[in-house]
Image: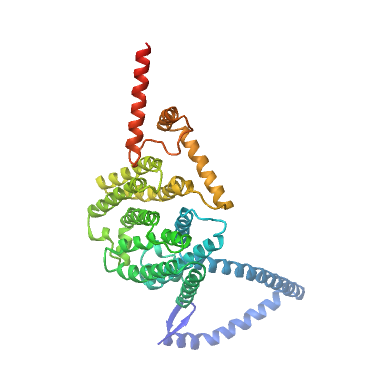
Length: 446
């Protein structure tokens, strides 16, 4: 049995010994000290000291009031920050961006659909917050063992488990309710499915199977499809939605495998079963990254062949994917953390670039539509950017010259000769014939 004094613990026997042997001495010392103090200090000095103590006490009380207000503000701010961390706000921001891309890509009357878009975006965000919170509730003990997750709110104590559970439930119910009321059954089902996949299947698999990353990629592929289905009243299997979902799926695999390779020791400490944890030299991880980078680079060609986007998307996709393939290849050849970081950092700017190009070259802006202020403005902007791009494209200028000479009309909307579309062979043949005829005419003239 021990008795605690301050920060140190002393056995009870020592405490009793100390008390019995020091009580008389303490009394004597106390009397002598009091007498000595009374003898040395005049009354005026004592009065001044008491006055000073009163003033200091008053000042301390004022400061305490101010500090209490500041503390309350800081506490509120830290709570808000803790809830944002619980919902993985940065990741949810990416979810909102891809959802909005899917909604806009449908090319509907955007101004009229503003309430629908708001319901879709807010509902999807709340579902994402809920799934992230549940994931952290289940993994809080593992998070405490990993350096990169030790600042999460339940590890630091910024939020209790009950607070996190309450927030996860509120976000989940609020998100699905908003989707159900404001969108359609298909979009609502996708939102519920994503919560179940992320908080259930993916979280369960992380410490048990290396295939958890592939399941997590499915979770990331669903939000743009939700944006599309919300804008089109539940058309789930439209080709545009499939292309958007496939892009997000194949983009995530190089992104997360590079991240898991960089933090492979940290994931091992947390007890997670990652692909990089089951190999010594990153052979399989680098192979998976390169393979999925190749799949990703093929999507602009598929989109062009299918007539979803113009041929310029395929051409610009070559430029966009060349560097991504290069860094993936470099990591395949030399499996270092530095090269893995290059793959990861490339993925951060690759996705927004791809999404912008997809929207820019989508053929939905060439379709006639009921007058809608917001849609008309976006369509006008897209065509203006396309026209500026044509002025910088040598192929466009050459083909437009011959096409205009043949038809006697203005230049066509899509003449850049990426020989991938269904009309490309005919365009090339017509251009070649015109060039040959022009050469023969000049030969006869001279």
